[in-house]
Length: 259
Ligand code: AMP
Image 1 (cartoon, rainbow, N blue to C red):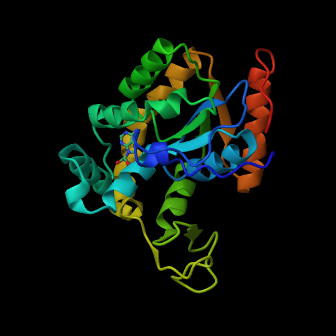
Image 2: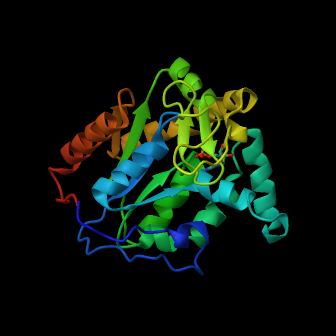
C-alpha cells in the first residue's frame, strides 16, 4: 500500500462545507463499493480494512447519525433530531431523511478516490435513489459485497460489543476483551455499550434488516454486482476473501489496482 495522508473524511462527517484533509490519490479506476450484511457481521471493520487495501474512503451513514447524536442538541436540525430518535430505538431512519443526508454529501459519491458505503443503501428506495444519482453522474458501482453469518453468531457479536467513548475503538467482552474491564486499551477511555447494541434494540434492528435490506440482495444480484462472502474467521481472513472475490468479479472487465 502506498504512503498517503490519512483522510479525516470531513466532507462525509461534517457535510459539503468541510474540506477533507487529504485529496484522493491519483486513482484511475477508483473502487465504488456497497457493503451489505446484517448488523454485527463486521461491515465497519471490513470497510476499514478495505480502505487500507483499496484506498477508497469508508462512508458509514450510522457513523454520521451517531456523530450528530453526540453533538449539542441545539446544533441539530429537526430532521436530524428525529433521525437520532429512530436510531436510538434501533429502527431505520426514514428514507427521505437518509437520502437528504447522503445527497448533501454527494461530493463523496463523485469523489475520484471512490467510496466504500457501509450501512447505505438499506432499503430498495435508497438503492434506487443511489442508482439514479450515480447514473445521472455517469458513475457506476464496482461491486456490492454481501457478508453472511448465522443469526446466533450475529446476536452474540452485537450484544458483547463495547465501544470507547473517547477514541471509538471497538472491543468485545469475550472475542476481544480489553486488558482492564470497561477501560479502553488505547486511550484509557470508558467503554460503553452502544444504545442500539442493547438486546431490545438488537431484535428490532435484525427484523428491520430482514424486512428492508434483504431484498437488496436480489436487486444487486439482478444487476450482476453481488459478491457473497462468509464473514467467519479473523478480520484479515475475511478481508482477503473479499479482495479475492472482488478481483474475480472485476478481472474480466476493467482493471483496478491495489494501492
Ligand atoms: P449502523 O451503524 O449502520 O448499524 O446504523 C445505526 C443506525 O443508524 C441504524 O440502526 C439506523 O437507525 C440508522 N441508519 C444508518 N444508516 C441507515 C440507512 N441507510 N437507512 C436507515 N437508517 C439508517
